[in-house]
Image (cartoon, rainbow, N blue to C red):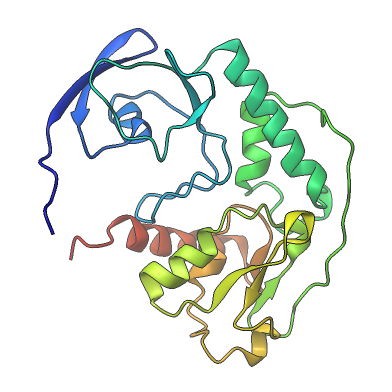
Amino acid sequence: MIREKVRVKTFKINGVDVTGQSNQTILEVARDNGIEIPTLCHLEGLSCVGSCRMCIVEIKGSREPTPACTAKIKEGIEVTTNSSKIEATRKMILSMMFSERTHTCSTCVANGDCELQNKSVELELQHSQVPYLNKRFEIDASHKNFVNDPNRCILCTRCIRVCDEIEGAHALDLAGRGLSTRIIHDMDEPWADSQSCTSCGKCVYVCPTGALYEKDVSEEEVIKKRGIILELVKNRGKY
């Protein structure tokens, strides 16, 4: 297999000249230069899938917004991360996430510790721009330690990727289509009956919402465990 030679590329982000390696993404170079681009499905150490579309940016000459987490940098491109069009589109994307499931923060176990909630504050989304659908899913609380509540899921697939790429179990996957899409264990079995799940909890602590959570655990313990898991994922392949 012939590997492409890594080269240094220079381009602009918001009118500022930046430099990165040709195997880096726009998101990586932006963050290296202190330029923040919002994300939800992205997690350092896991593969990038661009499913949430929160990281969209404008590239001069391109007709459509581009997800920064999957787009490799190119020499001379001009990237805009914060135009009025991009900000309006992000708000619409966020509105659709809220509308598709039941994200009532006051009754959620992740209230005050939810990335979706935080993004709505950061982007100043005061109300949904689209009607609520409120499709209902059955909650799986069969596991002795964990709960899977599809009603809170944003289908970021972090749980699937960490189970596959870090734990090596691939106990999780997607099932269904459209609004009926949800996370399942093995062949759509109750979590407690999964033959592949190792009960490691990695999926729970990379979840950005309250879709996956641990039973009877204090907030302090949640923060501690999440920190350990996120550090493990971030340092993937370094040891």
